[in-house]
Image 1 (cartoon, one colour):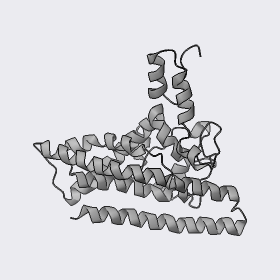
Image 2 (tube, rainbow, N blue to C red):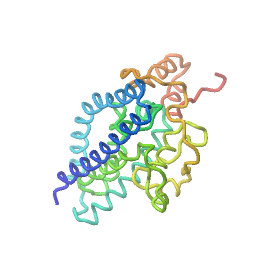
Image 3 (tube, rainbow, N blue to C red):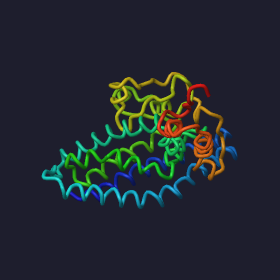
Length: 279
């Protein structure tokens, strides 16, 4: 079982699906006269995040595989690479992604990276590749338990890529609700909710492939009206540099204004928007 080839094939398959949806989205905008300069610039800003992300991710993936391989060599047990173990690793990678994703919304230091993905006021396929440069670092750490369970490094990487690749097609307004699939699979409708900044939609629908995790841990929200996309705060820039580092200026201002080490750690490790008492 050559999982390296499978990983590439899964990634390419969802890339092609995403490319097809993008062409339809653009055609629809042209037909309706909605393809404005701002929309095009927003797409370019989203695509631009791949420049620093790919550079950093190349080292992260290499480091992750090396670290998982070292752990595998030290363990007195291992899980054999079979069909059932590959299916299990995808399910566990998706469960891991749910908590990785949820925690990234709750800890401000991690949010500095994930907020990049949420900073677009548009919802289209290009938003799917809008990532913070260092987002993969937290993913590497979050998947360490799978390495200690004894899963082969190539299986873990396959699971991680499968979960991320699946989500490509979720970033669109073209596809409505999908009937019974909505009960257990993540769908464009569920993911539109996740990108909404309306109060009722905040911090909901963290799942990657499956939405059942959100139903289990009470973070599920059905799409009721079209969300307002983007960050809760006023951010609507198409400048690539501002998009890449959107959260850092205010974080640095808060850190430099801290009155104690406790406050500084609070700004780093508490929820985004946290303020010390009496501030």
